[in-house]
Image (cartoon, rainbow, N blue to C red; front, side, top):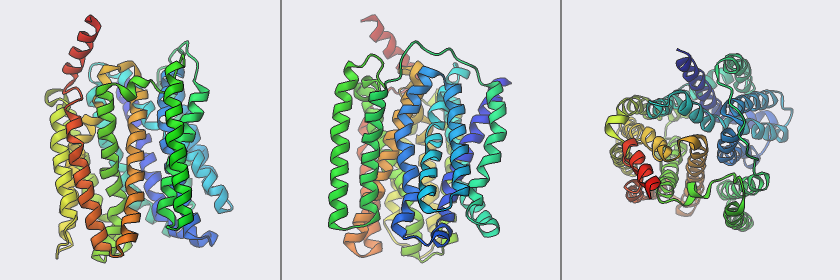
Length: 454
């Protein structure tokens, strides 16, 4: 019973995180008019959250493995609550952007900590538990835009941040009581490696955000410098981590063949699934002439289908394994993305296409979340953090490239057609990587036993 209470607490926290992320997009126009700021500056209210989220994911996973998942989860919950409260009282855009960064440090650590906790609480059925967690997050994606619109209309934009505070405080007490306290491992946190990793990811995401915010020679130059700095720092990090006693990132999780395959797949997953989720509302407005509210509703079939099929996949994951749900899901999502590249006379077709993408996402997400965790079950939080980093980076790169394509083509339909065709090709190109990952939990354990015997 206690384990299911823990799952309920973790699930509610992820729903709150998803609501907090999606409701802000609805409040965005009100924030601009409230502070009388430019669209470029206002864009950082959303971009800074993405920056912090991506940077903290792998770090939170490692911190959870060393200091304990309970400590990490409660710390993230505190930071998310504090950031939300600071956002709600921010008197200007600068403090709001800073407060969103604080909020992102908490939001980015939820998933790695939650996966680590579930791996400990459900040792015999962790694959199902982690899979079901994947089906919970889209609930917040459905609730967020609708709740956000209601709150902004009735109480103003600050209410989308205020609502997080009591909800998180209510969850904090039971989480403190029921989560198991773990002994701290006799390992140190790699502070130099942590700083290098965070600055590298921050530089990359900032560079991608600059590309998407304003297309000028100066911006492209600044973006290029930041991206090059990020790559250089990542090279330095890998060399440093090889010599570190307690590396923030286990190089094996980056370079080992099954892990590298999983990271490549998850990067492509982010570039296509996360990227398209960000672009479809704009596609509905500019190509099909939908209103703002209708463009938000257009993604609801996708989230609903994802909830249904990720629950189904999670239930049968021990029987089906990882590989074939990922393959089937990738093909289904790619088919949906391909269809988005065509213009149809009926708007209702868009709802069906989005449902097809949601079915594919629901099939692939639980399996791709679990793949390779069996190889290092004691590092479940770290692996999840790395995986999330690759997904978020892929999504950010996808959106940045998409904005450039739309600007260069000058025709919204042609631009979006190129984007969705490109996403289809990219996702299909990731399929070979699936066959380099363990096909099932049993295959992963067999591989571990074989490696141990050599």
